[in-house]
Image (cartoon, rainbow, N blue to C red):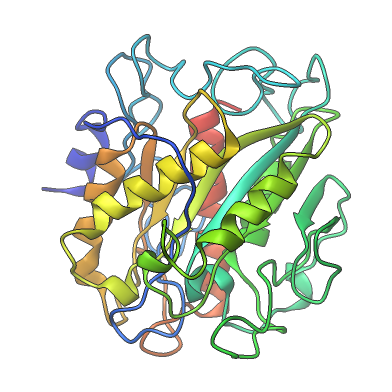
Length: 339
């Protein structure tokens, strides 16, 4: 089935139960997160990606370009609870800003996004000056080379380092920083973005769900993030699968991860969960059929294409591709949240 067919096909079939989780991989011998890319905009465009190859769950109209909106009642899916600061995040509810910088929110909202997966989400390519962020509206909980357990100015790498495998990723760039920088262009006036990075290189998704070695770490970070003033759980971006390449049980575990994360947040609304395709030039692009399947199974599931990206080894995106993927995640999240 073509990518366009997947984009307009309809909404996910299953509602997720809550709890917490994170995405990782450990089955292709991969040493980091997988690759993914923008859907629309074609090779190397790095500007769209949010349109093609995404589905959100439920029934009901209100589809945006290249995706269908989830939940009964159309594009209200994922925003049944306005939370502190209104509905600017988590869906199209009141308070969502449009245009450059977004419209002012009724109350300031701290929109918090989870960054989950393995090495391609943690980042492997060396960071450059262009990756730096000086915008105080973009924060990270902890982050490599920064004090743990507090909100710091977001700068790569965003996940803890050196990482569970002991690899030195303290000088790398991850797609999460470009995801956040892309969101800033539509952020409602007065609001702030918080990034919670839980990626672990070379890990299977089994390590992120209940019983896994990284599950408690995810729960701990969520518990801390929830205490922030005006915090609102807004969405998840996920790049993982190399370590679970081709395993038919993987989509169901992605759903479990989403449900466990949602349960840990204690929210009664669904949020966008955006998966990235694995790099075509790497080890495990055959896994992308399962990436699409997992998106279809989520209430607000989307995927972004890896088209036009490149790898610098068997597993990892090069610097330009990290930027492309981060922007595509951001554009797809903006579309899903109706910002």
